[in-house]
Length: 323
Image (cartoon, rainbow, N blue to C red; front, side):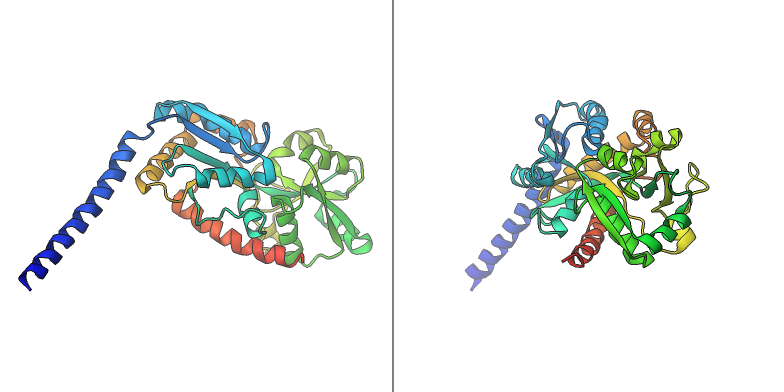
């Protein structure tokens, strides 16, 4: 009996030592991180918003972490290949996945099987606001647009099916009760903008960051912005919440994910590094130049995870109504 008790004590001690050793190992890994070059995987093609986001942080990330950065674009299957690659590479923080809202939408739609059980958020850094945008020669304001819809129906464009644009469109339809609108997907923002300016579409749903140049020239104009309060840059344009009480505020969010099994200490180090970049003058200049300053984009790891989980549930419901 005494031998059995002694054996149990020894085993308990071994478990404690093993657990402590594991924790010490994670802390040591974080202290030494990074130990090799870091690969930034972008699930979109060069020149797009997510790719520009990655490249806007690349140099500072390399400087702060004292390592080399390699950007790899894996746009196949709407970024599903990029997500799977991140989830199958080692969980050591040396593979970082830059994503947009397309990640959680495609997962909710069942088109991307790499969910939040395989990838975990580090931080959100951008929240690009959506708006309903028209040719001002056709509609002076949102009221005129609604009157046209009630009398004639409307074709409303956006980039791709099951995109953040279409999710914004569906949220607007559900919350406003405005019927007789159909969504028309286009391959890119430039194409859908040209269709509106050429009167082949009545309107489109898209990010504010991509319309400023056309708004300045008078070729396009946002008539409804999907946010909580009116924006200083567009003081005369109504918004979904303050003016109509419609809970339509999601846009195109961009953030950073890593393998779900990455040690928490490494995630914390990456999060603090990205926050330093986010607060830097260099990044703020990039935000201003890209018209991304309308809404504060920052969310830390825990808040971003909670937001992605909420979005997943919301998008699943929206998508199920399409079937």
